[in-house]
Image 1 (cartoon, helix red, strand yellow):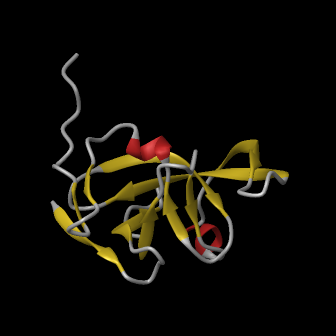
Image 2 (cartoon, rainbow, N blue to C red):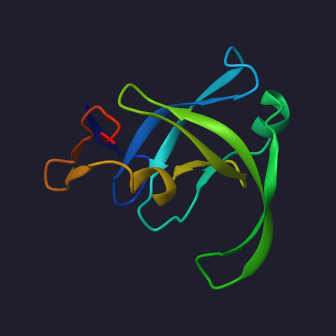
Length: 129
């Protein structure tokens, strides 16, 4: 799968169209455009999605923001899916923007081509046991 960077960001950045899916009911899903952020530890979804999909509670974790502020946030279980992958991950509901973090990205091979403002994400296949 290849895609273009989004000009919504300055400088332009890679984004993915992802589906956030309820693990309790796979028919309940929301599609969003998400920033691909190698600096984010966890995947973040916008406010309202947890309630809309009735995502199950996982626990709490302390996160530190860009400016060093630290806060306790709630983790929710969700399935994150694109044409290239599908993973069950804990997500954080924060702000209005979706972000695919390293909890997902570290499972993938992602190739960024900054000069051409494109990126490639081959279809994921789980490793053999």
